[in-house]
Length: 473
Image 1 (tube, rainbow, N blue to C red):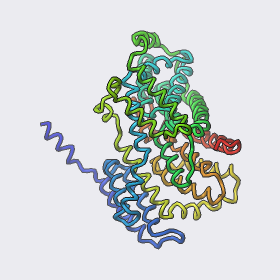
Image 2: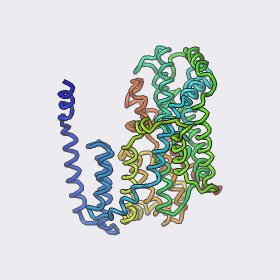
Image 3: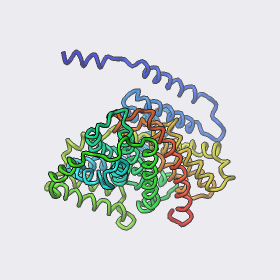
Image 4: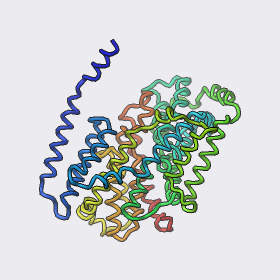
């Protein structure tokens, strides 16, 4: 019977995906047969259209993202866009190894018990009033997400929050406090994710693209000086917005007696927790001192992950680490970077910059920052794949900055920061970590999301303007 069931699942045909796949192929043929626009090479035209088709396949998951990512990388050579050797060299970037390492580090953080310990200790950090409990979850989530992968952080805090919601009889779909909590945690996690380069693979990819296209280095400290305070300010804004949009149905939260009991049961720091703290603290020091040690952010992360496996440390096994690794994410990062660099090398980025953005040269820097930040936020409505947004936009903005005589980082960083904006269409894995608890619906997130997004644009403009003015970048 088990085999019969398995066969029935395998034989199920999704005709929508088949139609979309076929239409995307015809779309590629049609758009590449059109006359090549002036200033754009045929190879650049093909690269731009191939990226469009790839995004369609990724958004609708016509086949698993990982295998389609590999296919589109290989097609660059078959379609005579760039040689296979160039495509593969752009695929195997340090960002992939950074993501792999941080996922392993996050797994060790959870398995060591330190993640649970921290979440239990901060859950009533600001008191037991409902609004303060929400802040006690959101602010620590944002802080931890600046140095650890977003999704595991959201999972840890949401699991503790869920038990508290149950003890307070918060009914899924009806409880305002439940909505605010289960939306606030992933919002804080996403915002914290851009606070430092270590918060997200998108950040490291952005730094890599800026280096490749503008030969410019952004240090961990430079990024953090701008990103961390902005992330914390936006988290506080988000908390305030959620409390006003979804006022809690009770003043005080009960159930913290059980939390205190769980804290007592934990006892002092375990050996595993101490080992993790030493390794991770060393890693953070290496991230901040990369300019002096010469150890890059990805290398420091790989060294940390490597150390977790060493005999005598044994904080994680390969089997457990492998189960925590999202190969779809790793392969998508590689493919997006490869396609983005193909667009850049074949003059597609230059064509976009000169054709569509040249008029920005007649405006002031604040207007340019406003336009770039708005694009970074609202591009997710049309292109809800952050890696693709960054891979296309940063090469284009590097060229635009060069044409305008502006520091490329001033235009590139706002895109990198806003790549985490997942509040308008909450289809990203970060908000979906709490969606299954059923406290909020897909149409609930855009309500606070649009206000947070507009505040994000304003913060981006202010922070980037003053960062350039006082010479941080």
